[in-house]
Length: 294
Image (cartoon, rainbow, N blue to C red; front, side, top):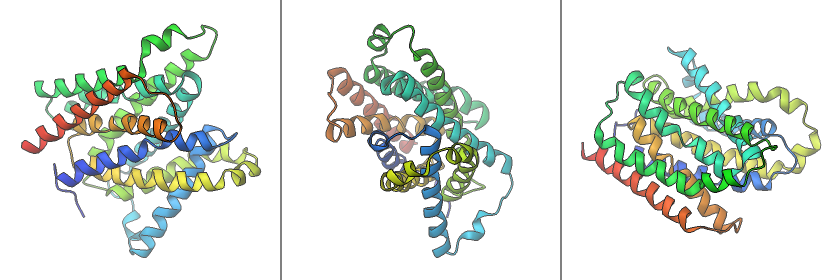
């Protein structure tokens, strides 16, 4: 079933999926001694099982056939894998704050590339929510404070590179999902994205000791099912709205992540963080109200 362009359901799906994505930090905090690649392989495997069983019971396996633009579908899976690896690596080397800051440079790339690729017009009205969103991310990440406390001999620069790559690939991913919306539904895109991620991560999984998978099995299953559910909802939602709008609405993920950090992980909260969250929520409200009024 196709998604009506600019429908309320599309906006709510992007918002809900972004909130679910915010729980990533909670899951990662509870996984012990596994590499980023092994974690991605595990959650992709359980997610793929969930999608396959759903399509089997709905008699929708026939939808999995490749149609036109299959090369772009494969590219989408590759980009999604790159985003995940680079984002997790950026967290490892430079910390959560910097990783979030660099991942959510994606709206900047989308605003630059969407007019050329998707023929989406970039108006002056788009600049205010983009500025609010980027300012909000800066307040949350507090890059000046982080940079001042960095040891020059650490792997911080490596984390910056991974973070920039994550932001760029995430931005292109958003555009690719929109580009393929007429050829593949959200759940079919998610299925093939997951298959490609599994193939890329397979070598790392083979070198991971089996006892680590067993020790983390419960949390990996919950992680895989949760993130896959969020992915299906997100791909479906982003297919029905402007790519630039979707990239800004996706910034609700760090806001959700901060809530989980405070409520579950008991991490401290700063005034600048709360102000940044308010700016991001304001930007999300502006773009959704503006697009729906059109």
